[in-house]
Image 1 (spheres, rainbow, N blue to C red):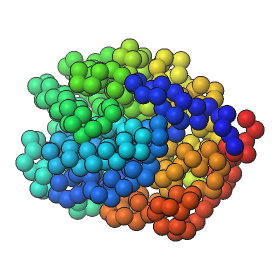
Image 2 (cartoon, rainbow, N blue to C red):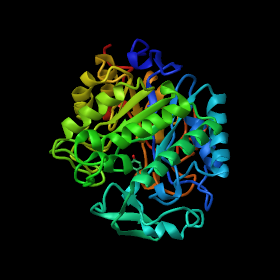
Image 3 (spheres, helix red, strand yellow):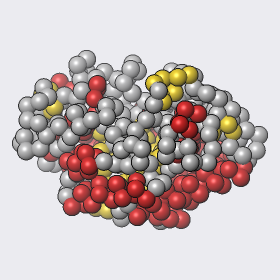
Image 4 (tube, helix red, strand yellow):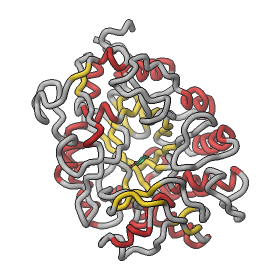
Length: 410
Ligand code: PHB
């Protein structure tokens, strides 16, 4: 047993004493009810299966408004029905002793005019999609009618930026009513905040464009709005610094990404937030992602952790392609304080316990990550076979994906 691993030691995060450092990453699962776009009963089961005493869960990206939606069947937090749906989720998580953040999402230009056909959204304020400038992302948008070319967005007017900030405020108020323990601003992955941050998507000439300070203005303003509702110890933020030669997100590029994200991270540090979550640039399909069936030599370094740790004094969380040993090493070295796990947590509702004990892991099935049913959502069994469908999924030894902590020399 690797009880001495720092990954399983308590840590104070904002107002909370976490009992371990294996966090459920925010994961789009596209199972919200239609047309309410609220969590369904199966989402209550899914999140509660993954809750543990003193463990932290982050909700899937949750739209602050109809305008902010960019993928079918993703939940929102702008209507009373959505708040009621989330309240059932947070009650279930709390009853198991867990904590849960709501990740607040506005996709900006990743939305598409097709969303105005949605019965809940057609009542909303403004489509086509909005962004910093009128530059569409390369590639395709995902709509209820399938993939279509991205459409040019409309640049937000100054008074509309105030309205978007107010949409964030309302969502933060709703997240409180829904029983969450805090809110995480999604400032990453090429969505609205990131579209303002990056020079390729932000060509504005007003105080939200041009210099790095101007491009970071919306990020900081929204953080301040969220703090006004929750206080700094219950507000977190996610960023996805990219670097030349590795992946970028949502076609957002910058001439000097290190300078940009250093400025953003130093600025966030001043707010003494609950935590900052950084994405490591190793998504599926990139040369940095190996998947479990591939090369088991997954000792990929933590690029952003190392680069930005010196600029952030608060609680830092990393996400993206972590194996058990990589998670352990990053926490023990102090590069990250917490590790968010995605695909292994999808497939293993009891992931923290399995990592601790070295139990084999259920293999994940990518085909059902974004399905619209229970399969691949609530049917992964725990090690004891007491939840989910026992023996449904093949097992993989932890050594195959990066050595098991139970066998690692500590
Ligand atoms: C997605 O739904 O594909 C998605 C959502 C949020 C992210 C990244 C990807 O941060």
